Length: 207
Image 1 (cartoon, one colour):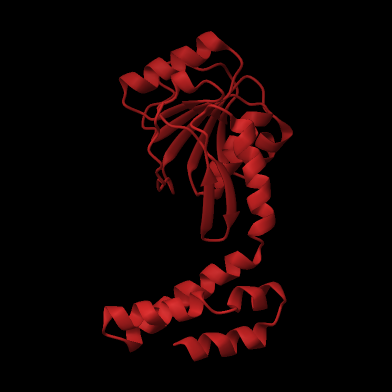
Image 2: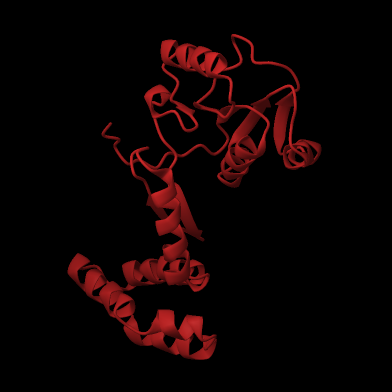
């Protein structure tokens, strides 16, 4: 299957997770992190999902899946080992044109969730189109070593820098050159070394 890579805004949008185990908990956590309005349907839940519910960060329905649970959903994720249930949710999602992911069952997926490295605004996603998720996870671990937490601050700096450059330069080419000066500089190394004063000086010199 050839999947088209796509990032989607789900902030404030209803997302349904069917299943309450460890895999479901990971899916729920990633949706919550993106600001989704998450509903979890399952007879049983992990302590992590229960904690999120107690904090008011997710809605839970402690029962089996029922037709209609996907109403109003932007997307659905199914994380159960019940193949018949998985097919049922997939069918309802398909009939209602709701994107659905059935974990570890590519043939029942209209979208897949890549293995992801997050560093603030920086998101690096890896996928093998469902052929070998273990390889994607292995590559993710390598990227986690290559791109440390300093990249989160780096993205914040670049966002602010772009705003300053846009205010200073009317010419798009001048803006591009200024941005490239910062990207080509040693700011990321300075951030990694915790040299914040030098970072500020370097940023000013690139404007």
